[in-house]
Image (cartoon, helix red, strand yellow):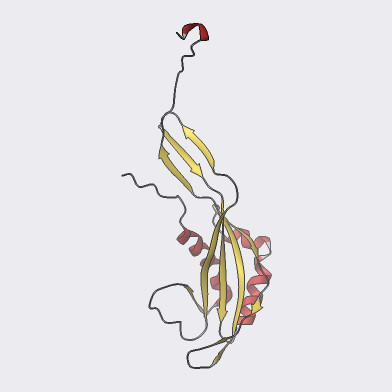
Amino acid sequence: MPNYIASIAVDDVADALIAFLTPFVAPSVIVRAQGNRVAPERGPFVLLTELRTVDIETPIVSGQQSGGVVSIEGRKRIDWQIDFYGPLSGDQCAAVTSVFRTPYTVSQFPANISPLYLSDGIQSPLITGEEQYESRWTVTCSVQYNPSVTIPAQFAITARVKSLKDIP
């Protein structure tokens, strides 16, 4: 059975988002959510959680007759929840929300991944397992990426059309 892989993985989108966030949240560590049996970071950190992926439009199908393949490109929006933890979380959130809405942000992402929008930050404090207050600010970030999948296809190079007179 053939294995058809998208040209851009969700991990590629996460890597681009992490690269953008890193200068604004240092010295905090950025981690992806939903790792099994992984304890939360000690000290300040930023947590990325994938919320949903939405098709922005109907996939675009393009073919190459000579190669016998079809490329299907799907334009997708992926929403991320970004949680900033620690004493600097409010300042980090404010810096990211201010800069994200500028042309600078577009220049920081690869050509095949585009920042769309970012919600305003909300304070969402947390009580830890040790029953201590933990400062947390949260935003939702939306990014567009356009993965394509190439699959084999058959093309008709020539066609013969019969008239109704030729059909018995």
